[in-house]
Image (cartoon, rainbow, N blue to C red; front, side, top):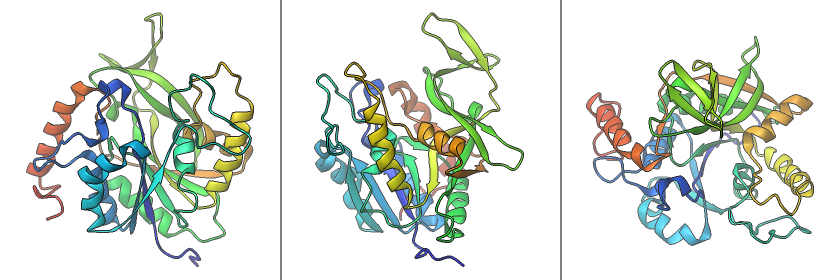
Length: 309
């Protein structure tokens, strides 16, 4: 029996600085025919799949612009809340190191939702398009959870070849799946590039190490339970305790956190295969192809031209 309250929330991580996007707020770039941004399509797909509430994780300095561009619009169609990821929002006894300029990563971002989200929830990146199938599968999984399945999570699994940018290297959580369809291993891997034969990891010295382009990767689309917040909270203290004063760029990342929970036997993660192609605006040059992709989806009838009309 499902002992949760049957509500499901979509948490959208939108606090990223967008440094690779030339300093602009890439999450707020219009890509649809009526000024829609990528988040509009994710929210549309989530609500259609059955999610009841949207929580935006943003920076405080972004709040006004964010609400003007999307927040106030979405507030008219569903329950909306805001969580704030700030660089100095740290556990008692810790202070921001001098010289630190960025927040602490996706783990800290989701932790900002503690007290705001009290039901099973999905987490996504703001600037990634995931496709309808992933939302349907994650929602179905979360809706079937009972309260004694507190540490049984899920992840939408995308094929690496469907998640690469034509315009530069990307970071992906490269996954190993066991014979039961469970996540066995996830390694946060930086600078994966598209090559003529598939994909490779580009090293700083320019050497390319080939990687299987059919590998499952995590695109930070996780299905989690509210009990995960306590795990994040205690884990963040441990993470900060191990840092030296020189670690100015270290990040507390969801794939790394979840990988350690799997290894210690504290959690299990069901991988939900999704065949949709991912696309997103990692680089400024990606925008044109994303605009064209949405035009194609509208022409194929996947979306109406007026999205929420």
